[in-house]
Length: 236
Image (cartoon, rainbow, N blue to C red; front, side, top):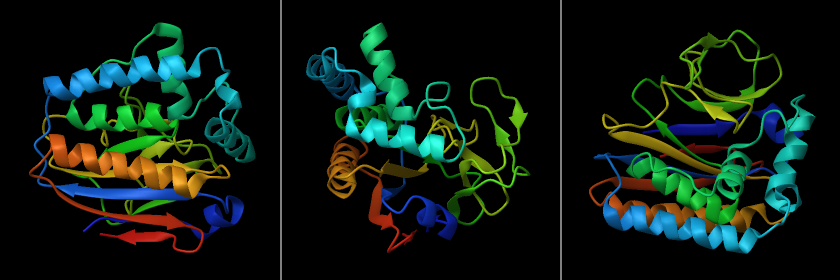
């Protein structure tokens, strides 16, 4: 069982938050099969064409994340939400690289819907994963540098029962421990939004994640649910 929840303080400060949660077990992860890699490349071409020269800040979903980052004291142009960072790379560099099956599924859906999709390995998670405000005493291992850090007090984090942080600045960057690789057999996948049509957008993106999981990770057991200010916890 995986437990994912928003703290009371987070839903009070961000009452429009909508999250889709997918728990997948019995995973065999590895390089993306050719069919998924081809689909991911085609999605990138399609998204570039749709975006054209539109500033990313004008997308409702991206604009809402920028406002949320500012609300907990983070400059959204210095620390971009995962969705904005990926779309920025796509529009400026022309492509997003393939990583592995699970990550590519998340990234494909993320660029399609302009929403952050996080795929967390569950091997080292203790108890529930909670989205809450940091005290500053928690532990985070940066995925890029391997450096151990403490989040800034008041920033939104994903954290487990042992104060191990799996994501900083809400949807800015995941930890080294939470990154999915060949050894991943269980994953928690989240899709989140804050804008006016967040519930519909999250539901559509979550359906796409599940469809791709069932196609490309067919042996996985999948459960799902939705979390928001009214129902802030998922047990599944």
